[in-house]
Image (cartoon, rainbow, N blue to C red; front, side):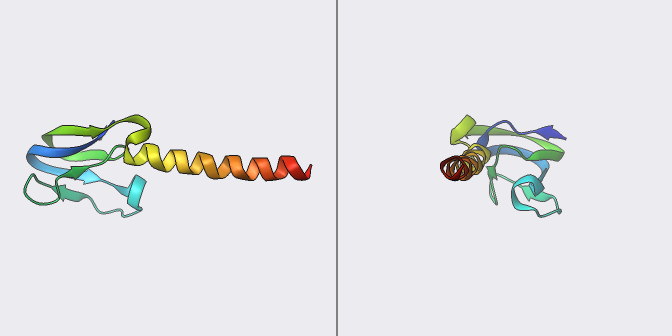
Length: 86
C-alpha cells in the first residue's frame, strides 16, 4: 500500500501491481512492467511487488498535482463569481 509520491517510468519491476483508482476510478489493480505499461503516476498505491522508477515529475507538475491545480482553479472561479454577485 505504499503511495507513489511522484510520476515516473518503471525501469525495473518484480510482479508490480498498482491501484490507480484514485485517478481513474477503476478498481482493478494494474500490472506494470518496463516493457508494457511502464508509466507510474503519483497518488497511486503499490499493492503487490516492487520496482524502481526514474522520476519524471513531482508536485504541481505531476499528474495528481495538475488535477488538484485544475480543481482548485475551478473552485476559485466559482468563489470569484459569488463575490461579484454578493
